[in-house]
Length: 262
Image (cartoon, rainbow, N blue to C red):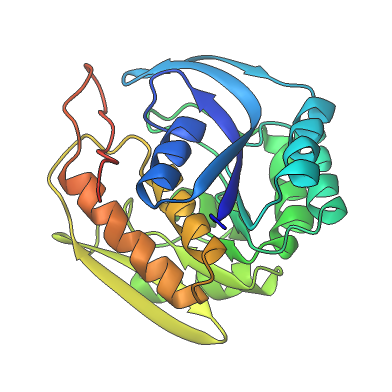
């Protein structure tokens, strides 16, 4: 049977991030993709102009519809704009026993638009994070969750360990926004009390819209297939690197990745 993967996230009208990027990633990795849309965003490569949140119960019902009929091998969570949506997603994760869960704690768009309300951050950290198998924060999200400041590799490791102490089984602290490596991007994985570093050359492109969504969706697909945690993350990161290297010069702002990778 084909692997069944659910993305619980916002919709991006430009097609570069959110559920659109997730579905493209699922398709490229040959899994069956399903969606529970949390918010509709009006955006393009230049920025986010409006967000319309769906009612929390509608988000829950979307998850229930696919869980009770098709089944869910793994799921990823992206944009959860407000506490009502988080509560309903939390209930769905528990009700339908979604164990292979990847949490991408989306807080800001590529253009800097706030996607997660301040009052929702603590709820996400205290309630949803402990139910996650893997959490994939970037520098700013990790600092927001931990209250720490990241200025060195040691800070990255300490921050990852702290987020792990909040309940996440595996923390992947992404290094894309961290510039003290100059020509390299270093991601830190903290899992089973061990540190693993992933090092990739930094691609000289502004077209990185949807990188976080693509990465977490690829991890979701890989763990849904039955890969172990470290293998799933490493494979997802290799996929992401290719997608960035082949990124598309579309639009006037931050262009999207190319997900058409076989």
